Image 1 (tube, one colour):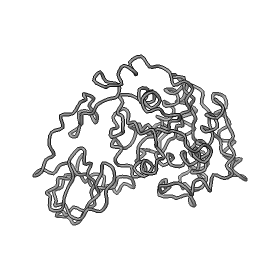
Image 2 (cartoon, one colour):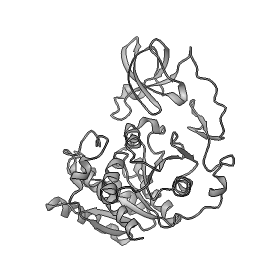
Image 3 (cartoon, one colour):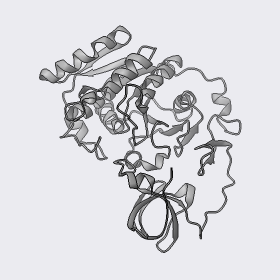
Image 4 (cartoon, helix red, strand yellow):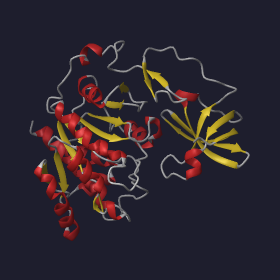
Length: 358
């Protein structure tokens, strides 16, 4: 199940919040590797390194690195900080964090009986790549909005894998902060569940709007139910039961070569059409021509349960080009998968308008 290798740390390629990318020399050659410094320490050239090379051997598009498991000759010091919430539970790299909702948290009293998002808009999307596009549409319509990102555990567990989040934080686009929920970890706040993560985003971080997606590295199997994006439907339910305003971003594409993702992806149709039992605002971007008609026709049945909200897309191209991080989804940029990013930005635009009409 795990491919183990040993090597020697070489050149540091780059680093960002919580992560270091480096070369490691192994008996099989030079391997690109990633170290999460909060877990294993910060590698330096010459360090002996133990690697998990499973994802690298598979050639995964997201996270296709060897992962540093340990620096056995230079272990990091013990961390005796507060917190009893264990994440990545019962894996060899399980870590203890301070959960915002646990008894030792200074915010425990705030969250103990919290039960209400007070109509706060929560934008929900399938893929991590939607996050910057949603924010581009939101800030174009309502500059200065205070936004938090809640990362679920359907894909990457360490938030530090996401250079997108690091760039958005540096640019001030996630001014309220980040929350990692479930088994995911590494956010400004840690929460046991999506429900307390949402409540913490509003009541502790003071967010006006929240964006919910999984981390990088969506898992799909080409089956109706075998994809981690089904959690988008569960997120709609969580927001609704907490009396928030769920805003569902569609995954649309003219460029994806896979039939199941062309037009409106089956991920969106399944998550919102079958899993979500509560009503959401499903944002339908106003796209031109026959493709726009195809999108409207595909989402029509969702109107039996949800509110279909057509959102104009004029001006969103310019907003997306101002994004402070690279827009990329499945290796495709804005030019190559224009409809996908515009659709996500339209969801952000709608969330901004909901705030203006509260």
